[in-house]
Image 1 (spheres, rainbow, N blue to C red):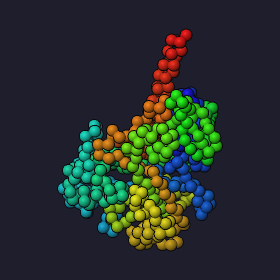
Image 2: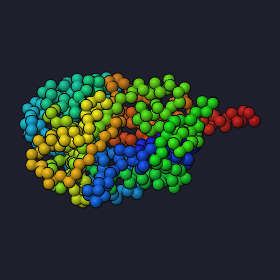
Image 3: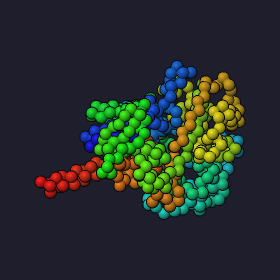
Image 4: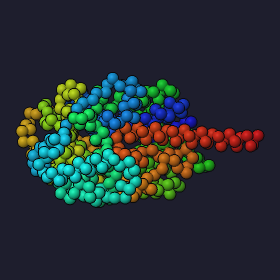
Amino acid sequence: MRVAIVGGGILGTSLGYFLSQAGADVHVVERSSNLGGLVAPIELDELGGTRVDRYYHCILSSDRHFIDLIEEVGLGDQLRQVETKMGFYHDARLFPMSTPLEFLRFPPLGMVDRARLAWTILACRRIRDWHDLEHISVEDWLIRMSGRHAYQTIWKPLLGAKFDGDFAQVPATYIWSRLVRMTDTRDGAAQKELMGYLIGGHLPVVEAMGARIIERGGTVQTDTAVTGVSIDTTGRVRGIQTNRGAVETDAVVLTTPTAIARRLLPEHLAPLAARWGELDLYLGVILLLVVLRRRLTPYYTTNVTDTSVPFTGVIETTNLIAPEHVGGYHLIYLPKYVYPGNPYATMDDETLRAEFMGHLRRMFPDLADDDIVTTRLFRERYVEPIHPIGGTDRIPPISTEIPGLYLANTSQIYPALTNCDSVTRHARAVSSLMLEEGKQQESVTNERVLVTV
C-alpha cells in the first residue's frame, strides 16, 4: 500500500510510523519547515537559542499509550515524573488546591459545597458508560451534581474561560473526561499529583518516528503545500497535488482540521465536503509566553475564576520541567481560547500583549520589569474541536465512499480530550482500519482475477 499522509503533526507522523511498521510505503507531507505541528518548539535568541515549547504539554501517568510509544522509539530515559501543585486565583487572592486538606479549606466554598464538589469528582470516576452524558449540557449536569453555588463560584468561570463564554451546547462528557483524566494523576494515599515531561520536549518523539519512516523506505517532505487530492476516472484516489508536483499513491489520509481537509477535495466531491462540515467548529487559541528570571508561583496550573482576567489560567511549566532544561529560566504560559468572532482573535499583537501583561501584573504586583526576559505571542486557529450535545452522529467517519480516501483528525476523538495520548491512540486505530480495508480490497481484487482466469 502506498499512502500519502497530509500533515506532519503528531497525528500524521505517528500514523505514518504505525503504517510503515506494517510494511506500507508512506509519504508524509507537511506544509511547515519541520514536523510536529502544535508540539514543535521555538528557539529564543534572547536565551542563546534555547528551544522551548510554543504551547505547553504534559504527560500524565495514565497516558500509557504515549508513554509506551516514547519507550518504543528509544526515548524512555528522557521521561521524568514530578509532583506538581495546583492553585486557584479567586477574588484577587491565590489559593492552594493541591491536596484534599487544601480542598477542604478552600474559603469560597462552604462545607456542603465542598462535599458536593468532591462527590462530583467521585461520581465521574464511577461512570463507565458516557453515552447518557452526551445528551446533557455540562451546565445542567454540574448544577445537579455540585449545586448552584459551587457551579457559580468554580465551574461557570472556568467553563466560560475555556469555551470563550459560550458553553450552552457543550455536553457533560467534557467535564467527565477531564476529571477522570486529571484524577488519574493522583498517586498513593497522599494523593500527590504526578505529571511527566520529556527532556527536550515532545518534538524528539515526532522526529524519531519520522526517522523510522525513512528507514523503512518511506519519505517525509516538509516545506510542501498540498493543493488537492487526485481522483481518477473510476472514482478512486490516485494521490495528491502539491506545490512541488504530483505524488501518486493508492491511499490518501487527510490529518488536517476538517475545514482545511474540505478545501483539498475536488469540486465533484462537494456532498462529501458538506457532510464533513456538519461538525466543523474549532476553538482557536491565543497564547502569551512570558520568560522570567525567577519563579512566579509554586503551581504548575493556576486556574483563574476572575472573569475580568482574559486568559484561562497561568501555566508555569517550569514547576514541572526542571529550569535547567530550558536554559535556567522560568516559563509562564497565558492561554486564551477563542472563537473566530472574538475581538481578541483579531487584536494586534502589541495591544494584546499589553493587556495580558497588565492583568498578570495586577495578579502578581511584585512582578518587576527586571524579572522579565522576553515575551512571545502565538496564535493557532484550529486547536480544540467542539462536539455539541448529542452530536456524535455528526462526527465524520475515517473511511469514505471514495476508495483510498481517509479523514483522520482530532474531530473524531471523542469523548476523550485532545492530547498526545488520545491522538496517538487514534492514529493507531486509523492504521489498523486502513490495513484491514487494504486486505479486504486485495482479497476482492484477487477473487476478480481468479474469476477472469
